[in-house]
Length: 236
Ligand code: ADP
Image (cartoon, rainbow, N blue to C red; front, side):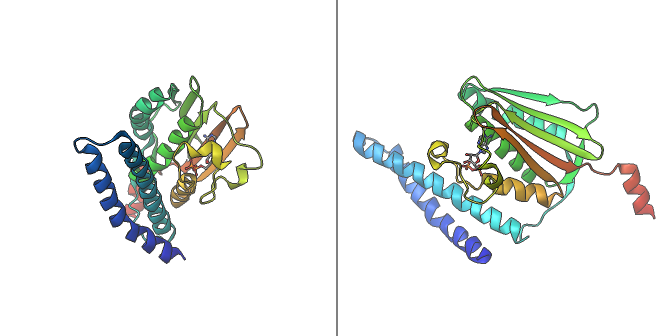
């Protein structure tokens, strides 16, 4: 099933890319009747959605099959969260969300990891926090450390998640009440990907949430052993 999912997702990429180019170039073309434009825009949104779905499925199945070469290198989480805050600030602004960054560590914190994937995981969490929080809400990205763990917290005061749904939100395709999620254009794969990435980094993820009050996602990652220890280990 895993191989089939990866193959099917892979095979869908080319026809979807062709369909997207066809729709977009027609939309860019000179004069189109308003109704035709409307229909093309619907097709464009659906093709984008399917493209995201195919990419996410491919990614998740490769990650689970350990087919993606994971290259662990020292990653500075201070830089990662600062970059993310900067990159997602325009999205937050577009949703009238106050996006805050709290770095509660004095020294830069490093973990061993694949920075692109870690970036993607934390970006998914911030993206969700923005999508599921009403205008004038607050989303806080926090970095702290506890013993040998780095802790990245994404906290929002948004719509929250019902206790009955909480155990399932990391499952593939699980979307809380499809109705409330539909307009975010998500695929229900985001949190499954986040968890797979965090676990590939020997970390863990927890969620606390209360309906109508907000949600807090907490990612724990083991801090990279200090360089002095590594070099002495290498010498030995
Ligand atoms: P989606 O693509 O639907 O966002 P995810 O896997 O990222 O899929 O999330 C699964 C479900 O968990 C979402 O449909 C949403 O209902 C809920 N969810 C995720 N993050 C939040 C959040 N910060 N606040 C409220 N609900 C959330």
